[in-house]
Image (cartoon, rainbow, N blue to C red; front, top):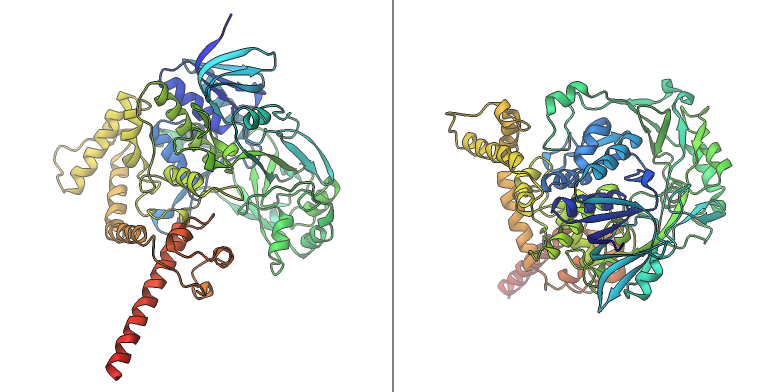
Length: 599
């Protein structure tokens, strides 16, 4: 019997889950194919959701009708707002999660979703006719017909695991790689692939830690959920937060690492691909920053029902015996017992310059790419792309206009604009500094920015949208000081009057700054063709990072427009450069005026 689906999603990680749920919720018959049903939505690295800029994206995914925030709220072990000592524009929610529970809950969401089937198999090739995808072939040689395909394969495309000098095929430790699909992408679709890598940390037994020597890191007293639809008071009553802990590497740790760099898979030449700059292995940290005598190590629980804890900051490709020595050199971990060792993994990715802003490939119609296959890193970046790819694949089949979010609307829009216009030479990670409109695209107002879009697409129900409209109208009413006939918090739930007042307070605080920000951003747009002196000394710009100065010196851009398109250059970097050039121009004009007057 011939099988036919509107959409086939390849891969069931964070991108694949959001993509398949979005397609099915649009009423389209969808199939998600995974190498292992037991590994749906796994967290092979840190079992945490959110973080700086990432938390904003999770709230945006939620406002558009995605699933990640809801699952994180149910599986969270500890909730914190990062950057809480700074302004609300950079407040970023983060949750440490029970990794097994998160996977189970997301898998159940997929299983319960109407219009969505799950198949454990491997896609060996794509069926392409007239530059259009029309099916996938699986290991049994069965061809499954479809109108669109979304590839969300994570680190599995020809994945190779490295343990010191030892290496073997695998998409994750103890999970096989996707062996065949890369060849089909290259030969059948004309897509160029590169190689990236990433590393994981050792996991240790919590009972082998000396907690008297390390610092406790508690969750927030009044934790804030990710999802706009979580009933906050009931959620807080039932939440049992676990503590994280903080310790540091030291000179002994660094000596163990530096004496054995030649044995690490990071430097032996067998992993030639680029690793994430902002999530480096301990070997890379010690090489890059020889002046530092210590680095943070956050000890984070992996679940309610396990003693396994994660050593955030100790990513490594060292052999097993050296990892044990390295761990035991750290204060509080002298007697720590390693349960799982860290490893490096390299995998195929596609340069995202080969996709449109809809995430559809430029070479093959109705073929969409999302997640780490596009060269990004992080569960949140993957989930955001999965949602957009799923929505756009669905909208195309339904003959509706695509969804393209702009930079001033969302972090998701910034992510997709960055990767599809700038490309990359290392894995991409989102930061608040990438957002020129960060004062107005905050985590607290993701619903106000994006829920109308989620409703128009068809991912937000009428029932919840009516509650959102009541919340928004109440916000306007109180802001305009019209205090009659206000709804109660029960009427607004899952929103509340407390949330209304918080939002008004933040808006009033930022209103003037937002106007200045928008003027500044518009000014940067107009300055695209402004020339940069050939011998310009970027060292004068003290606000720029060393990395940014190095990139400017290497490329020597001729215009502001060219500078803005350099990989990893942020809008804030361009703003700093533009202001300095404007200042330089005024000083020169004043000098010329003075010289004429002296004549």
